[in-house]
Each structure stands twice: as structure tokens, then as C-alpha cells.
Image (cartoon, rainbow, N blue to C red):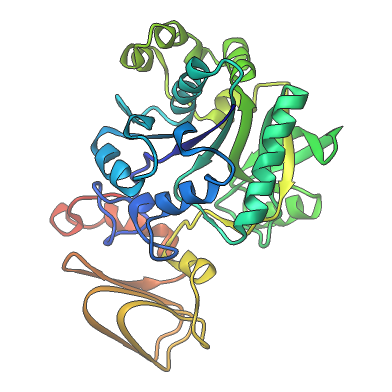
Length: 345
């Protein structure tokens, strides 16, 4: 019995002003006609039955997530009592899978990625599940880097395990550009956050290495998720489990993965015109190159700009550069609350 857990609870600030707390990044159609969450679940359905897809999100977003996923049973959308990072969410969802099937194997992924090659993604996910089942390890899939990205984590593969799988030597979180180039030259992979494990092995590793979660497991066994969350301490699954276990493995994957970290990233995941521009809505570009323009209201005309980001949504117009788009949170922190409004995404 193979299950998938989709993490869909984030409420950051990277796609303001389009995003809000009620409509964050995973509920936006950033890469195509459908919300990222919908695309994520549809991408895995050939591999996992909809009845075995669990979506973990926040209470305020649960109904919107259910509307975005009409093929997934409503009871499979799990609303966290409160946010506590990724390890508690995955512990809860893995327990739910194990309660239905003690032999469950679990694939974990995020709702706000894009994938350029879905068939290759499913092949990598199926391989990760097989390695987790056959080798009794926790598996992470690493993507082959295409640039010295400083906003991603990296995985350094170690000794051979089985087939293409290797043990994990170490993780490196968000290196500077020079360190990223050195990591890539040494064969390091991007840490995508695509994980696989059996429910039994995940629980055993949590009990052995993750005190932030272990205290809440008895409450989960009683079916009391709220009490479990009160006993949990916030920790990411990367830090709380993968960086501590001796049973971690990494598989290489090449499927056009992107976490769409800022408005500028849309140039990588959406079709561009002959000048490298992305335009969504009623947009007219004249002598413009490398721009991202998103207009949900009225007509937007861009003339003579290069590498600009222009967003018109909810009565707000944002104009910045592609280089500064990843720093949007810093900008919002400097604006009056009345301008920023309801933050999200």
C-alpha cells in the first residue's frame, strides 16, 4: 500500500500582492491554468490512488484545499491544530497511513513545486518508494543542479547503497555562490524535499533520533492529533530526522524540478515570448526583455524595461526588478500595514 503526503500549509510572502493568507502560493495558478496544489496531486495520481493521498494544511486553508482537490476524499485533507514545521505534519500523516495499513510506504512532497517532466518525476518517486521498501531506509531525491542556486539546500552523496541509491554524507543549507559552485563540482544535488519511507521505519527513526516528536507519538496512537501537536516541538524533517538518522539514502532525479521561489522564477516555469518575457492577463510589452508581468486588473503596458517584475492585483501595483524579487519579504517589512494588507503566499 503506497501513500502520498502533500504538505500544503505554507503562508509566506513571496508572491505578494497576488497572494494572501487565504490564497497563498499553493492555491495560485502560477505555472499554468490550475493551482499548484491541484497540479501536484494530479501529477502523482497515476502512481498513488486518490484515496491514499493525504494533504496536510492549516485550518483556514482546509476548505480551499478540498475545493481544489475534488477527487481526493474530504477527510484526507488534514487541518493542523497549529503550524509546527514539517516533521510534526509528516509524523501525523504517516501515522494516519499506518493506521489504515501498517505496511504503508509513504511518499512526501510539497504542494508548491513545479515539475517540467511529470513522467520522469513519477519514475523517480516510484524508485524512491522501492528503495525505501527494499532497503529499509529513509530516502530523499536530489535534483541535478542547473545553476549555483543560493536559496536551496544541497545533499552530498556518500557511499553506494543499492543501484543508484547512495548513503547521505551531509546536508548543506543555502550556501553562498562560491560554495554552491564547489558543491556542484563535487557532485552535490539540490535537496528537493521529495522523500520516501515506510511508516514503520519512519516511526523507529523518530523514536531513536527526534525527541521533538517522540513525546507526541502516544497521543497519535490514541487518535488525538491536537494533544500530539501540543507535545511536539517544531522541527523540520530535514533537521529532526534526516540529519540525525544513519539510515538515510539519496537518489538522483532529473525531472525539471523548481520550487518557484519568487516572481522572477516564473521565467523558468512559464512560456516566454521571443524576448524572454512572461505576461499573464491583459498585458502589452513594447521593447521589453526578461520581464514578468502579471495583471489581474485592467490593462498593463510595459515599455523599454529589462528584467522587471510588475504585478497588478487586489488594487495594488508592485514594480521591482527580477534581482530583488526574492527579497520581497524585506520590502513588505518596510511598508505600512495598510499597504501590505493581508499577507500570505
